[in-house]
Length: 107
Image (cartoon, rainbow, N blue to C red):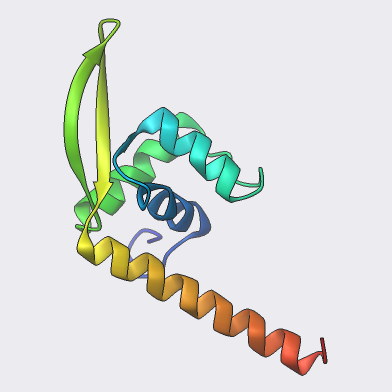
């Protein structure tokens, strides 16, 4: 959700979609966003963690666990039921919008 709104930005959508597969840490989420978006989505580390923080504040993701790997803290996130409903609703909304455009263009 862009700051101050209930809308879902494309990077947020792909972060939520990535977490549907199960808990992931930040780097794995970033890789999944790249794959799911066909390479279009490449959020910087700062942008990604800002997105994750906002999604966590909204209650659509939560911290699953933390571990230390090679002396560095690794935080895993998981999607909540509310987040699952949100990403599915957004997918349906985008599908309906695309269907309308394609129908109106005769394709």
